[in-house]
Image (tube, rainbow, N blue to C red; front, side, top):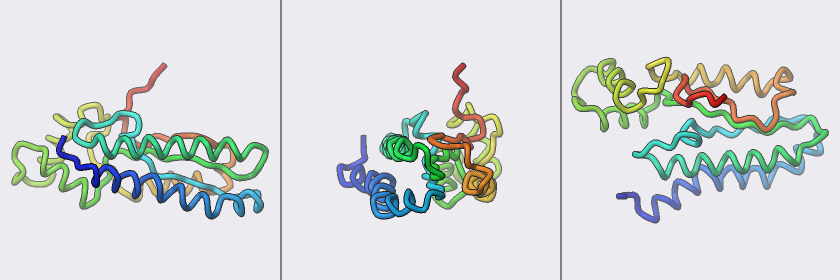
Length: 166
């Protein structure tokens, strides 16, 4: 409830409009090349919006819609458009979020992280922050020729936070 209109617009601009601008500029040339990979970095928050980050989840959900619309325009080409959905990935921002939501924000980092996954993200199966290198390895696969059959996918890399729907 504390998020201002300006903050909502900022999150939308940074997380959605920036990707739309890039696509609008490069997409026609990418289609002409007939072999390009577009990979949007969304978040598990696009599927399960955290109550403390509704503005962020909204922006990441909108990013999935852009990816879906672009992917539909790649029919019969070598261009793919996918999104990756990382879970909580170690960064300055997530470390600060963890510190702000745990009971003892002066505890050692490992204890704060354990409490975060126990109380704030209890659905996580890996119960730890993801390292950026882990996400990069998955993105490299999607970006390679080996990723040719993956198109219009929202690839979950969230450590099991999002329950599988049968």
